Image 1 (tube, rainbow, N blue to C red):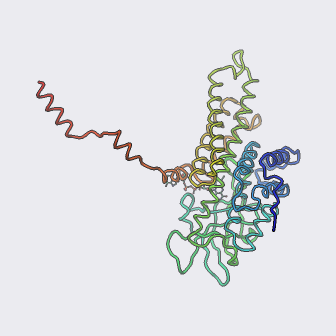
Image 2: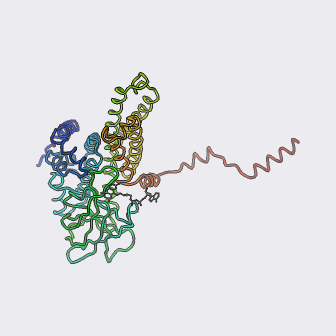
Image 3: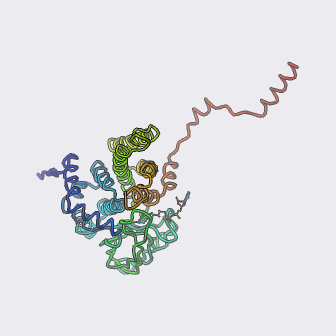
Length: 406
Ligand SMILES: Cc1cc2nc3c(=O)[nH]c(=O)nc-3n(C[C@H](O)[C@H](O)[C@H](O)COP(=O)(O)OP(=O)(O)OC[C@H]3O[C@@H](n4cnc5c(N)ncnc54)[C@H](O)[C@@H]3O)c2cc1C
């Protein structure tokens, strides 16, 4: 009989304690600050998390990661105030999710193990110049060739492709037996087999290192993660995980911004009192903090229900939290006055730009609302009981009564 040994960080308290300790190290801070200043994703962060067993503790032997570990990892990265780096870690982890759950071949499983150990950095790309929200508009293809597939095309946005070793590509799988728009397939490709362009100069989350990629190459069949027609479903699963993580990350960023803003309000004086003494400002921050607290509880609720990776709940969480995050950053920057808009005086402007990116990356607001809309249910019974629509006959009846009275 084999006995499964419990992972030393399977309980959330020791996981959190270990993660906090790693992130507080002077050497880690330096990696993050340098990367943020250079606007380039630091692969040392993935290596560090892997080496310290963070990904392994999240996944253990399961096909899905622990929800609570996912929340803590993203939340803690959000609190670092570097949206690009936090998102890069999430994308790496979402690619692991696809390989863990759907990677059937020895080769795919081996890459997943190396990614969890921090020896390989992963990224995912679906977006093309002509296909973003509408993934079924993807034009890059995977065509059968011998014992494998020829992958040909381009991707506009792949983060952090400049430092990644492997990329998960969403492609149209051309297969004699299938035709039509819903033919998306997913393949894993070593980045040594493609051309990575120069990283884009992005408005925010600059350290995510998003760059375009070009490819015309061959891979063995066992690099296929999802066969034609199943790619969208697999991608949706990974996106659900990414969206739940992004919601946690933005809550972490809000925690940092509100804490720093309250500190500023308690120190800065105007009209003989601190900014905190001015009710108009104090209540505005209290309102934001109240909503951030409620969203944190909502995320905990999703964890308790096991619904964090549910496509609809994760979409709802991301769109709601990110929009709240934009409001929080904007108000905090406002309360900082001129110091909020001077890059030399505070990071508020950078945080404000970072959170705005999250309204687009990982699915735009509108796409996420569409997912929620697909599940909206009409309450016909209550409508029939409570609503009576005005009918033209009523006017005739009213006129008849008026005539009688007159
Ligand atoms: C920082 C950053 C990093 C990124 N990293 C990656 C990555 O690693 N991999 C990757 O694949 N992609 C990545 N992306 C791309 C991102 O996923 C896409 O930008 C996003 O899906 C939107 O696609 P698009 O830019 O083509 O916009 P479009 O699809 O052209 O949409 C433009 C606008 O129209 C709205 N819209 C579109 N269709 C509808 C509709 N039917 N109803 C209502 N509104 C609609 C959208 O919501 C959006 O506001 C990244 C983006 C950012 C900002």
